[in-house]
Amino acid sequence: MVKRKEYLARLFAWKDEKVIKVVTGMRRCGKSTLLLQYMEELKQQGVSEEQIIYLNFEELENEALLQYNTLYAYIKERLCKNKTTYIFLDEIQNVEKYEKAIDSLYVKEHTDIYITGSNSYLLSGELATLLTGRYIEISMLPLSFKEYCELSKTVGDAAFAEYMRFGGLPYLSTMAKTEEKPNTYIEGIYNTVIIKDIEERQKRLEHNPNKRKVTDIALLKTIAKYLSSVIGSPVSVKSVTDYIRSNVTKISPNTINDYMEALAEAFIFYPAERMDVVGKEVLKLNKKWYIVDLGIRNHILPRKHYDLGFSLENIVFLELLRRNYHVNIGKIDKSEVDFVAQKNAVITYFQVTADLTNESTFEREIAPLKSIKDNYEKIILTLDRYTIGNYDGIKVVNVLDWLTQ
Image (cartoon, rainbow, N blue to C red; front, side):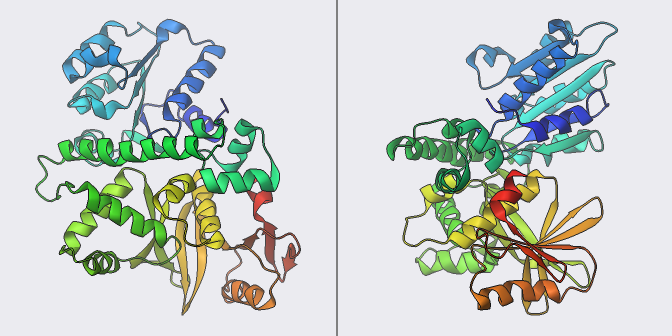
């Protein structure tokens, strides 16, 4: 295993605070492993075995605890007196009405609660209502390139080519990279997320008349395929609707919007809103959609052409999220900055391009950054090493160096 150091640091930052720690992320991105690593660190710091309760609700031996009242009674009996009990509930969405058990455990003294889930809808329903202001979310992604190198024991350009092709799902990174194994593994995870996690969403929508159920899996996969093909390009509900209608399927924009939301809630896609750089106003139209893992994208899309630039942009976007930035797409008049990344009220502007050695490409990429008149840091990330340097305060950095720093 590779230690997920950034996520561990976030968990420790909230240790013993009276808030519920909610770790969310796509299935098989490493949430369960993160909890196990965290529990091991707690033990090394002197926390005893009896102070730790861990339940994974995908394991058959915990089937008897899938009712909230049974789960609550089980944990209550095992709470330590006069010292903290650390409670870890993995894939909690499998428990019926789990919100009631969580709420009751939360109000007890000396409890520190950690839960994971594979669908963000668990934080938009009754749990959010019950626990408003009493939980924090840690959104988890597959392996970063740096973690991938550490786990796969590969480095440099060859490792990056492999990472771009197969993605960063933790188990896959240690697998022999034959043509058949990775594709079969990715297909299994993708279908599980599309079917199982979306079905779980359906159950939780039964009492919400404002949301349409996602029942057409073929349509869902068609939308996912389209979004995968337009990574790095502005997308609207209308443009997706027009694409679906061009294939002779009658569909309403509202239905398309609900299906796109379902893909985001299952952590397959991450939308990024556009921002007016001058006025710092968020624009609601034409978001960009990035996929959680390039291995999944390569599985979804037939390999008709090679779009290195957009794949690179996708990797940088996810890395900025891992580094806890809030990320927007920057709009400056008619031009665009790939990413406006904000953290602690500080902004960094990023352009991403595969190669800057062509003079016209260099001018096209640097021009939007030059037009920004504030003094925040401006960076161009590129695969080439020939143009690295500082150009009137605008840094050109090799993207592999940036990813592994």
